Image 1 (spheres, one colour):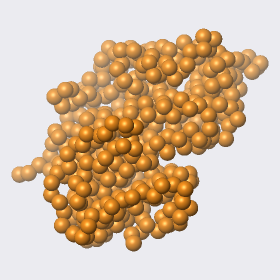
Image 2: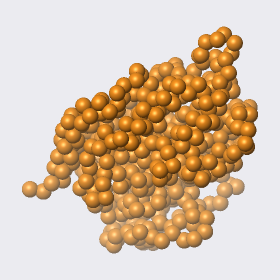
Image 3: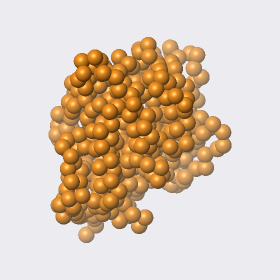
Amino acid sequence: MGKMKKGIVLLLLVSLLLLTFAACRPSGGNSSVTTKSAETGTQPAGDGRSAAVSTLPSDLSFGNISVNLAVRDREDILFEIDPDFNTVDVLATDIARRNEAAQNALNVNIELKKIPGTWAEREAFQTTVRNNSQLNADEVYDAVFGPYYSLVPLMLEGYFQNLNEAQYLNLNNPWWNNRFVYECSYLDKLYMVEGELTLSMLDSAFVMFYDTQLYSNFTKNGESIYDIVSDQEWTLEKLGGIVKDVYADDGDGIRNAADTFGLVSPAFASGRDGFPTAFNVKVAWKDDEGKIASDFNTQRNIDIYENFYKFLHENDGVFVNGNNDGARTGAQDMFQNGQAMFITELLNYANIVRGLDRNYGVIPLPKYDTDQTDYATNSEAVHSQISIGKSSAKKAATEAVLEQMCFLTYRDVTMDYYRTVKYRNQREEESVKMLDIILGSITSNFGAQFSSEITSPFPTPIGEEQNISTGLSGKKEMVDALLLNLKRKIYNLDKTE
């Protein structure tokens, strides 16, 4: 029994009221691998997720081999793959069942290998992966789960395989982040992927929480915020109009954290991390032919930054509470004390507010305007992406394991994650509907994925007002040179002489 199976039996025993998941092991235990490629399956009609079917060949069997998954040793990330690190009983049970089902379906043992995982340990993460690639086939990491800021340097050094050439990963399936696959593929090369298997992608999404009582008090026409979002009318202008009159001084005549505001935001969510992504601001753009160029000094981006600066600095209902951990905690305190109608935060903030007496809801950050087609949600850099090691001797099995686990997460786990977010406050049924919009809008782009290689030219909107047009134009040559160098590095990956 693989290491992942430890502790699973107990979790299953305490779940007698749940239906047992019937996963059939291929008969005969044949160690040979079926070679027919997976094709995109037509998902059946019905309730969508629970009716979905795997697109893997049904007779895959890998002879009880072990597949090694390197995962970061930190509780806030391990919950997505290791049931022993999940504090929510229903999710722990779901994830244990998912892992067991994937092992049974493919006749493999999944082994979790913990490696350094904090921001401060990112170099140790990379060194560990480099050193491991020299070991024998039984010990080598077959797949690595990590943040892009740790994976990108390893990718550019040639440690990972091109996932667009994988036999058993079907990245067109809805359980993978299709936006990410499109935006971050270049020259038909893609070395990192994310999807519902990496639940930290959703857990770390930038969203807005709102106080339903304050919203009701200050919104006289009774317009539902959920209807606004669903009707694609949730924009910066709409948000600004709602919060502009929501300000109440505490009596000292000083505008500070003791007052009540329409929106309170720690600065990290008001800078590059939250709103610009929501407004579809990009350093590098990909055209319909797959060409990537820096096109950041557009009039649209200039207008966005000028108008967003005014929103943050000139709207009486907005309070940006500094740019450090203390300021973030202060913003949270204001929301929890009923001093803010809205707060920008990560979705996992639900862990904190679940015990509030006050009602709250969850919605995506707004679009810039109604001309923007879709909502766009950024997931904080810490979330997991997945790469497959080039030195792995078990690539086919690894691809199949990842595909099956992502499919099973889509079918059996994600909805319980949704419900868990709701159950944390046990209110606002509509918030669960919003989570599907948020999940479907999570995106990245080439410039964001490779931000360590391409310096962002955008100023922080919380600082002094700048001539954004002149500033962006002055940085065009530098960004173009960095982008060209990056594209050359990717071009040379897997290049045959």
